[in-house]
Length: 130
Image: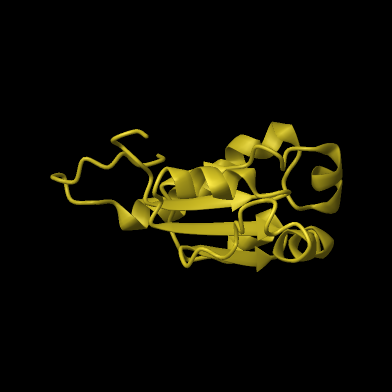
């Protein structure tokens, strides 16, 4: 594990939750996962939970059933890391969950603006997503 670990992680597009598990492995303090597909959430919480290592059972994990763009527009929270490995798909873009690839920089900028609210004092060596 890295020394400069993100403390607050936002994951958009959870799928089978590999990004949640990765954030847990790297000792994130708080992990917020946003998933637009209710069936995916139900499967990961239910019949596949044990096989997947119970990704949502960790007290650091908060799961939100919403589209990614809407969540980012509404949240007042800041995050150290934004993870969207499985979310940049045609289906997700068509549903409005994430913007088309050409708009991803603007989408990420919205998250970054919120993250600037929680900038650490200069003595805190934790890197920020700016």
